[in-house]
Image 1 (cartoon, rainbow, N blue to C red):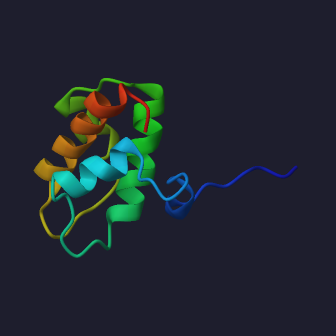
Image 2: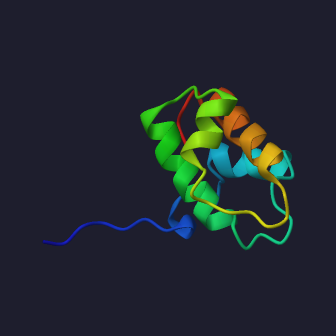
Length: 90
């Protein structure tokens, strides 16, 4: 059975970033950007299932993703900003 696969490149529509991707940029949530695709894809799932997560819920949901640059606080802020910008739509 074929299942659709969405990659980070498939999130933006008509050249416009999603609220989550925009919040990532605005919150300077990346440094080396190696972990960014994984975090954004995971956070997209989070916002689809929980459109208004607390900082603790974001941290718990994303605990399987690793950022060696130490951007976790900015990543959490970006996800919460995206929830506010997109009213939970990733």
